[in-house]
Image (cartoon, rainbow, N blue to C red; front, side, top):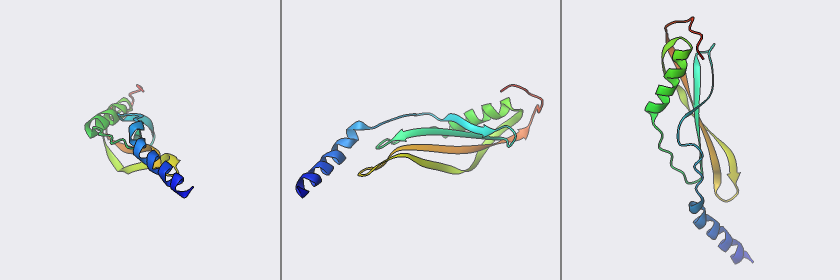
Length: 115
């Protein structure tokens, strides 16, 4: 019985690489505050995935949101926060949600009402 359990675990680990779950391969705006002049960007990935995201794409997206609020640009603010959304008892975290925050900088047209 013990050997069957170990064999089962071994098979699960070896075949789990075949079931890679790639949820989001690009940064997406997931929050922020016009009043605090912050933008939150996130992406999600599954077990075994090795996301290669563009920091240039992220800063461009954050700048676009900040410009809509009347600021002239954006810069990274703080670090990256990774949250495990789903945990497997044998594999560990199989669904990760990553968030990075950006600070809007430079006052441009503060009366700009575009959102």
